[in-house]
Amino acid sequence: MEGFIPEDDSVCLLSHELEDLDYTKLYQAYSAKGRNPAVDPKTMFKILTYSYSGATI
Image: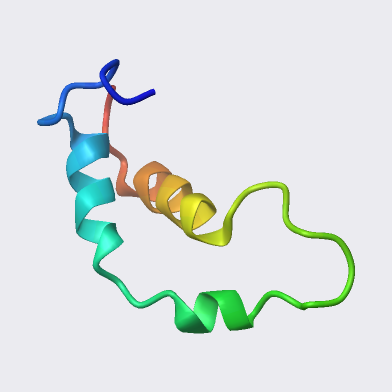
């Protein structure tokens, strides 16, 4: 998907900012038992954060 969205778009800017966070506790919240999540927890956090930000496309 890189290359389709300009680097200065709000979704890219937010994604770059969220890369520097420590996701240790987020990953600890996921159980090692059972099935793996369909989407990586860090990716889902980015999607939810963007959607809650109220950014417009």
